Image (tube, rainbow, N blue to C red):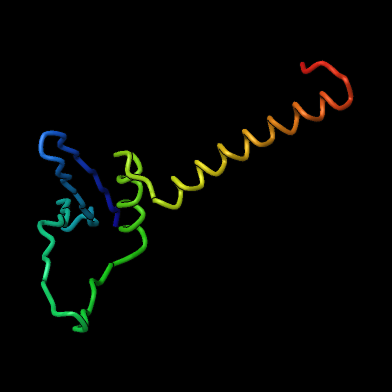
Length: 108
């Protein structure tokens, strides 16, 4: 089994189209693929539980995550980390400037 995912983004209506398929081993020399055709949303009252969705394997999720990444969709936590890294880099630059100033050296 090989999961493949592709995401199309449409700027004109801000919709995203997901293509998710699973290539199956050949049966009698013919290749088949299972395609995700729809997602169903069910409205439930607050407090009602849901059984969730069964995911066949981790490869499916990995294909989906990889497709999201290629489409420019990033985890929110990763975006926060990037801004923190920028702040850390600016802080280190300030500390270097102070250190060079204290010892009377010229910065390279």
